[in-house]
Image 1 (tube, rainbow, N blue to C red):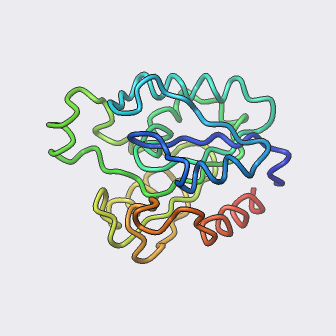
Image 2: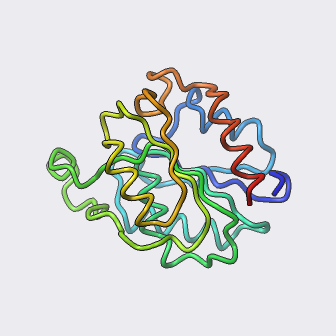
Image 3: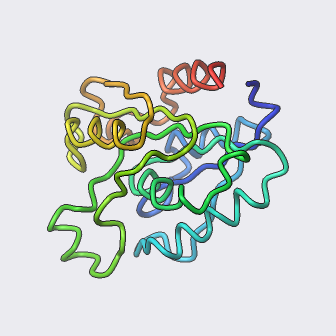
Length: 184
């Protein structure tokens, strides 16, 4: 599938994606990309965030390609049963954040992202994970990829795929995304 024939839905994580984050840079460069906006980027709430994603997919005029990062990945997984899979070309899932961790339950009580869904998403996907991501172990990310029936990619020591870990422009990610879209 060509990017111009799809609607790219950018689904950032906690705090939104800064102007220097790869998701923002990609959005600026892809004419069919738009961000799934949230009312509160600093206090993620599963119900509110999945509602916004469902609305965005329903409003898409072309097949949607979901580009999610961090808790945005869990937003996709939680929204999947409510999404019309025929409207989704695929999901590019990067650096999932593990909201089953006790520290997040304490910091964000009643966030709703835990436990993570354990059923197939119902559409094609690729999950990229890092061996030194402090927000989710690579083993857990690989397990979720199996549960969700999406392909898994080990990105090596890539941190949490943020500008702090050297993933501002992230050309390797863009190449992986292009290869993924060609497989759709």
